[in-house]
Amino acid sequence: MEIKPQKRIFVGLLVLTCVILLVLIFLQSGIGKIGNFEGTAKYMASYGMPYTTLFLVGAIFFELVGSITVILGYFTRFGAFLLIIFLIPTTLIFHTNFADPMQKINFMKNVSMFGGCLILLMAGAGRFSLDSLLSGRKKG
Image 1 (cartoon, rainbow, N blue to C red):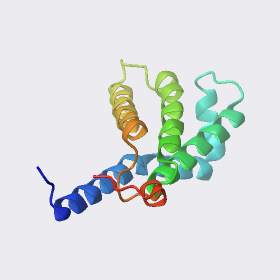
Image 2: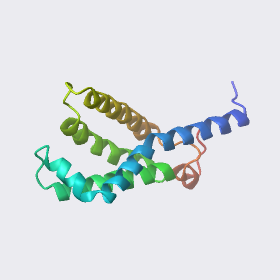
Image 3: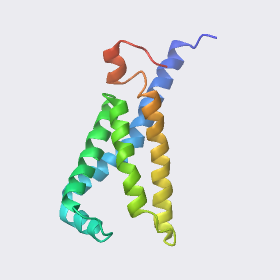
Image 4: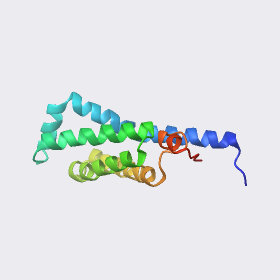
């Protein structure tokens, strides 16, 4: 069964929209950490983290580079990998107090984003990405 070109374009644009929506939270969070660097470092230290400045700079790097590469669709799988690496310790360190309903929600939110990033890692960003355009392939 042949898929009509209009449907392929629609699906490609829908995938692009979904990819951008998935990672906007990381972009906003990374920018927010820069704007409140000292406050974020103190928050991290309150959880007993050592070397908060080092880990905070790393978190900002992973969130910004990961989200920007995914949004652009350039080195998408690498960006998704960075976001996955960011999510694992963040989720396990800051969101495991299940007695607090908000932390339970944040834990589940991170698990959901982890799943979305795994899909990106496996499938890439789709046909309307720089990865696809530069490789000369058309993706549905």
